[in-house]
Length: 429
Image 1 (cartoon, helix red, strand yellow):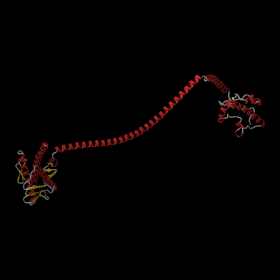
Image 2 (cartoon, one colour):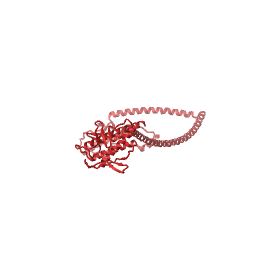
Image 3 (cartoon, rainbow, N blue to C red):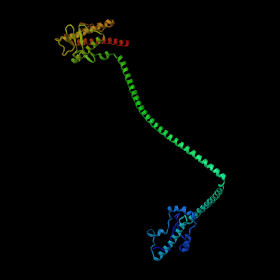
């Protein structure tokens, strides 16, 4: 149920504030509505045609009366009398607001503040319109005065001359335009040529940088290889200098002693009851000794008489040239009185070859002298005057071992003399 005494409010169409209407708007007569429906400004007939085109895009203002028709409207539910009275008041007010909205540029209803603002805007538009009307009026008078002056013949000649000048200027401008167009076409062709030249130069630049990068990489690799070769050359040169200063014989054949034994390259040469050296080690020592004496003789270009040394590891032997037989410098058994005399003969022949080496050195160096005297298979200790046989037969292990130690000592002295001569020859070269 709707209270009939309730006031129906409208909203301002600009600020959307609720409005309370004066009760005098509840009853409007038909004459009042007809007067309000009259247009506020009379349009000039001449303005109809220019505005007719704008009617195609005209959007009519929103009408309050149309919102209450059909399904889009509203209905008040209550007593029949009350409903009709309230609906009538709404229709009357809505009609009033639609008439006002259609007669002006502003939509109604409006509140007091919006109305005042609207009036101020209308006053400003009025003043601007009056100013424009004044300007147009003065311009119209000026045009009328100019039309009267155009009838003057002299002024017409001036205008004709000016027209001819303008046409000549137009011709000149057309010719200049054609020249500019030709220049533009030539410029475009030149630009196209330059673009193609630029692309060609870019391609050449890319190719150049690729080749540069490749050559740069090859250069870096070559420099690295050159530095590597220089390092290798320096290392090889240092190694060569070190090798030049190195005595090959001393590095290859190391003669020393170990207790009662003479040693060559750590192989003991000899045998004692308290230290039964294995015959494989003794044979290897004889092989190293034979190889050393052979190398020394070759260095001095010495050829042994009656014998030829054949270094063959732990099975070395000596060839007797006039008898065409081999004497072994290796053994395989213990000390016996019935020993194979070939081993003894081989050791005596080796001592003979060492004596020949001594005599050959003394020919070139009269001051050379070995510490132990050698004669017919015996070695004499000059300090004590004792002689020791190099044979095993009818000999003790102690004396045989001491004779071998003296033999290695003499061989070491010969090695030192040849090494010294070798160093001098290298220095002279």
